[in-house]
Structure formats: structure tokens, C-alpha cells
Image 1 (cartoon, protein in one colour):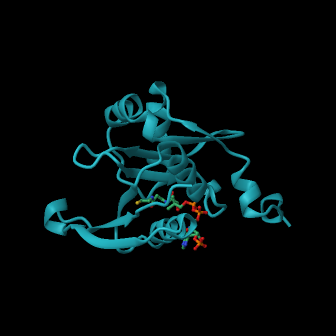
Image 2: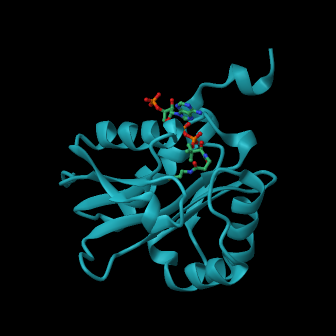
Length: 170
Ligand SMILES: CC(C)(COP(=O)(O)OP(=O)(O)OC[C@H]1O[C@@H](n2cnc3c(N)ncnc32)[C@H](O)[C@@H]1OP(=O)(O)O)[C@@H](O)C(=O)NCCC(=O)NCCS
């Protein structure tokens, strides 16, 4: 039996150290997205900008071999009490052990938003399950509505808005 299989998921997620994104994390964030697959790879500039401006609403997970996951979030100017998750990613080797959920829980505890929003494509089962698990964990309702159609996205898959909240204060 491999070591990873022998360790309960929650304990394995706990092996990562979670911290707010710092201004100099842009290159690591870009590398996580470029190497991980499943996410739109934006320019290196976009991740430098996000690390500098959205660090307080974002989290990065450090494993023993370096960064292994992140959530880039922001407070939308139109409804700043909400935490909008722009991108969430976990390195392939670290997936399925609770790290995605741990990072989102950590961020919600830090930011204390009234709601959390994220857009997800209809075929991204892992991501749908992730936000479903977060809503259950927070004991908050989850609503899913169409956010952008193919025509809005240059022919790419549509995006559905997953809106969680109101999030009970603890
Ligand atoms: C989506 C992603 C961030 C999930 O991270 P993760 O650390 O593997 O997720 P967790 O281990 O915390 O699991 C959270 C929930 O998702 C479920 N899940 C995770 N991966 C799954 C998969 N491949 N298929 C189905 N369900 C999955 C888990 O079972 C769990 O749900 P449950 O509590 O109901 O059992 C990760 O798969 C990833 O980086 N994917 C590529 C990038 C991406 O698609 N990002 C999201 C775009 S919106």
C-alpha cells in the first residue's frame, strides 16, 4: 500500500501549509495553472497583477516540494461583501485529498464574506462537487444560474454561477 493511500484525506490536506497570497507569488500561480490543466492559462502578467492586488482574498498551499494549490479570489466592486473565486487549482499529484475544500474553508474564515461565488462549466464535475461540498460544510444554500453563454465566451463552454450564501457567521 502506498503512503498516500494509508493517510486519511483530512490528514493529507493538513500536510500543506495555507497562507495568504503574497505580492511575489505571481510566477508560482502562473506555473500551477500552466502545469495543472483544466483552467484557462492567463498571461504571466495577469498572475503578477492578481498576486499584488488580490492577495488578501487569495490563498496558496505550500507542500514539502513547493506550491501545490491556490485559490485566487476578489471582492467584486458591485457587491464587495461577496468573495468571488476567479480560479481554484490543485496540482494533479495533490488532488482528491481535501486540499481544494481546505483552501476554500480557510479563505472563507479569513475573509468572512456573506456569499461566495464561482463560475463553473457544466462538464466540470470535480469543481461542481467541490463547491457543493463547501456549501454543505458551511451549512449555506447553493444556487446555480447561467452566467455566460458560448457566444459571450468566443465559443468556449458556458459558465454557470455557483452562489453560496448567506454564509452563517460562527
Ligand atoms: C477542482 C479541484 C480544484 C478540486 O480540488 P481537490 O483538492 O482535488 O478537491 P477535494 O479533494 O477538496 O474534493 C472536494 C470535493 O470534490 C470531489 N471531487 C474532487 N475531485 C473530483 C473528481 N475528479 N471527480 C468527482 N468529484 C471530485 C470530492 O469527492 C469532494 O466532494 P465530496 O466531499 O462530496 O466527496 C481540482 O480537481 C483541480 O485543480 N482541477 C483542475 C482545475 C479546475 O477545474 N478548477 C476549477 C475551475 S472552476
